[in-house]
Length: 302
Image (cartoon, rainbow, N blue to C red; front, side, top):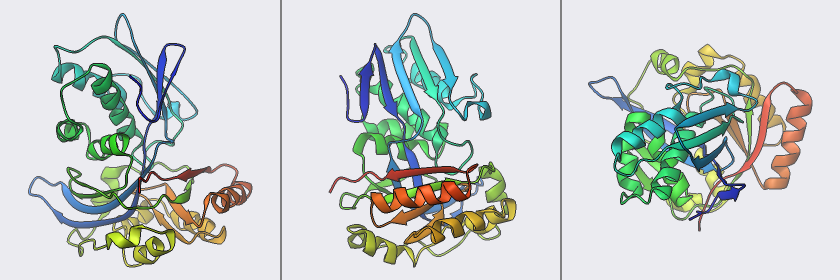
């Protein structure tokens, strides 16, 4: 069985894992155990790292790609952790697997590359092992792998934007949202999530309020985003001052709106259409050839 977004080629099942974009991210509290509470409008694109899978005689994992040097290929890698999680959670269904990850996204960049890869493993094995486990139930269990894993699993399953609350476990699907053409830019500095939250001076910001009607067109979305924030930008800017330069580059290229995603360092610009985004990407790449620049169109099912 092959799902949307998957390709079977020479015995391997391929999937591009989710890119996560926090269009707005409000930090609204902190639990007694130290975890921060967030409210976030999250969009996705299935154009991240390339994950391939096949049944195999024993568990095997191969890591390649332009950003592979920033990762480990042992038990700490989220692909391996997700595979082992599935084997331990569903031992009666578990079978040896071959996974290859082509790492195409920058590491520690605020777009949930690792979490998207983990979600890709969960989604593939849930399907290939024919598990009697809903996406919602698996997402709930997968929180142990990381706060962004459940939402990335939802993105693969439903291919829609989400409204996410709590520590990442409270997820609402946004069924009437338009797709958005964007340019992603990363200047190359890795930013650790823990360091950003440690530098956050206040964790009781006002909640995120956005009308679902505003999500139906690019213009109304941009207007609504003007009243929102990413509360992690200020602490991230202390760690990576060049974030301001990245946002300026997006604005100068014609972005209708620009912001940092997650804890950074990836920033996004929203454009009127795909052609405008592609032209902007070429402009930014010509000015900053060493930066990571990527054009995407976000998921939506109106």
